[in-house]
Length: 388
Image (cartoon, rainbow, N blue to C red; front, top):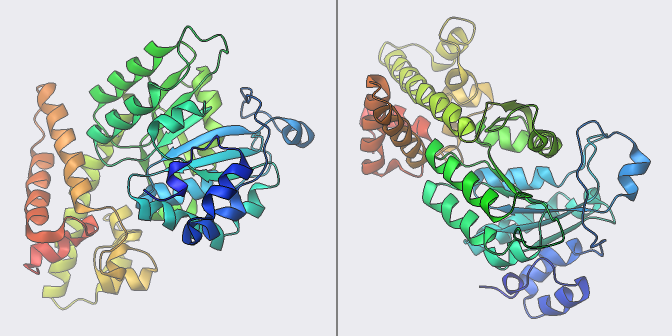
C-alpha cells in the first residue's frame, strides 16, 4: 500500500500532509484536497432544508465511499459536488478501494475537475487506509459500489465491526448505502447485521440503473430497499440526488435489489434482441445509422438502441455507447452474467420459470468464456457474429 493509504481519514490535516511528503506522486494529487474541518458530529438532515445560511453554519457530514471502479469513480466525484439548496452541509469525503490505482485515478480526476474548490473551505477529500479505518472515523454515511455479493459482505462486515455499538453513549448514527447489485437475501442479511450492532445504524440496498454514462452525468436511478415514509429515506435522498435524478423507494430491506434484478433480466434480453437486429441489418445491407434511427422512433426503441447501441457505427452517430470505444468503459459482460445468475437463482428459489433470462445467461456465459468478460455487454453483437 502507498503512504497515503496508510493514513486514515480522521488524521489531522497537518499530520497527513507530513506523511504525504514521502510519496510525491500521490501527494501532488491529494495535497490540495486536505483541508481543516469541524470534527463535530453532523446532525441529521432532510431534503426540505433549503436555508443557505443554516447550511453554511452546520458542521460537515462525514461520508465514506468504497469502490472506485467505472461506476463508483464517477459517483464519488459527483457526491462531493454541492448542488444548490440540496440541504446538505459541507462534506468530508473519504474514498477507499483495494486497487490502489483506482484511488490514484480518483484523485487525478478530482484534481482535473478542481474538486477542492467546488467543495469549499469547510470540505475535505482524503483516502482511507483500510476498512477498519473507515469505521473508526465514525462516518455518517458509507456508500459502496462493489462488483459481487461477496465483496459487499466483506466490506460491510469489515466496516461495521469498527463502528460505535449499542453500548456507546454517543448515539452516533451511520447509514450504509449499498449501490451494488446483489441478491435480495444478501441485502436482508446485511441490513440485519448493521442494525444488530446498534439501533442507531441502518443499511439500505440502493442499486442503480443508468450505466457509466448515467454515473458520469449524475442521472442515475436509485432503487431503495426502504419505505418512502422512513427516516432513512429522508436522510439518504438528498445525498443520492447528487448522483442521480431518480430515487425510488421500493419497500422493505432487499426490495431495491429485487427490483434491480428484474430490471437487468429484462435489459439483457433487450440488448440481445438489439444485437441480433443490428447484425441482421448488416447482413441485409442496411445502413446501421438508418436502422438505429428508425428503431428509436419505432416500437423497438429502448435504452440498448438509443443510449448504448451495440453497433459501433450507430453508436458513433448517436454520440453515446461503449461500442464506439471498442466496448471499453461500459457495463461489463462479467457483471451482466453475475446479475443474470442472481436473477435466475432468485427465480429458482421462488419456483418461477425464467426461460428467457436463462437463455440470456447462457449466451453471456459463453461470451465471457470467449474472452469478452471485461467488455461492455453490448459486445454480444460481436460474439453472435463469431468475432473473437
